[in-house]
Image (cartoon, rainbow, N blue to C red; front, side, top):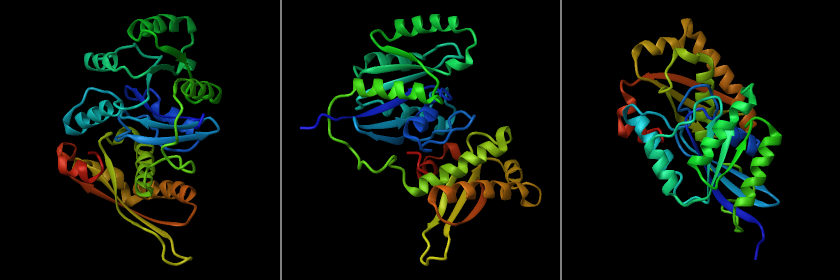
Length: 297
C-alpha cells in the first residue's frame, strides 16, 4: 500500500490567463508554448510532475474564447472535454481583467462535483492590492467552498504554494506514467510547437493566430555524424501572408529557421537540419479533415 499521491489536474480558464506559464513553471521544462497571442494552446498538453509526494498529471487546455469557425469551436470543445474524469480542476483567472464567466462555463463548473482550486493570477500587475478584495469576494460567491490563491505564475515561491495545495487536495494512488518523463508529447509534436512559438514571437501582429505548423518529416540520423532532419510546413490562410513569412529575399524565414534550430538543438541535444516551407490553404481552420491531419481532433 502506497502513501504517495497521484491524480489528473486540469488547468482551465480563458485565453492568456497564464495556464501554460504555470505548467512550465511547475514542471521546470517547456511543456506548453507561451506567446502573447490568444488561443496558442490547441490541444490538451500533459505535463507530469514527479516528486517524493507522488505524481501529478497536469492538463493544459485551450483557453476559453468566443469561437469563430471550426477551429475555434473545436478548441472550446477540447477545453470542456478535458475537465471530465479528472481529480481536480484548477480554474485560473486574470486579476488584471474583470471577472466574467459565460453561462455555459458556469453551468458546467457548478454542476461538476470535481474538487476545484481557484488561482487569481498576475497579482503582481495590480498596483493597488485593495482592488483584489472585490474580485476574491466575487469568486467566493461564484465558487462556494473553493479555496482562492492569489499568485504569480512566474514566481517560484507562489508555484511551490500551488504544488503544495494540489498535493493536499489529491488522494493516494499509484503513478499513471513512468516517473522519468515530464510530458506525453511525441518529439514531432514538441518540434512543431517550438517552431510555432518562434513564428508568433518573430512576426507578432503581422500574422494571425490561426497560422499552423505541421511536420512533413522527422528523420533520425542513421550515422553518428549525420544531423536530425526536421521538415516543417507553415500554413497560412491567405496568399498575402506568404510573402510576410518569407520576407524579402527569404530573410524572414531564414531568421525564423535560425532561431528555431538553435532552440531545437538545445532541446534534442543534437545537430539539426531544419527545413521550413510556407503553404497557402484558404479557410483551413474550417476544414475538418485538415484539422485532423495536423492533430486538432
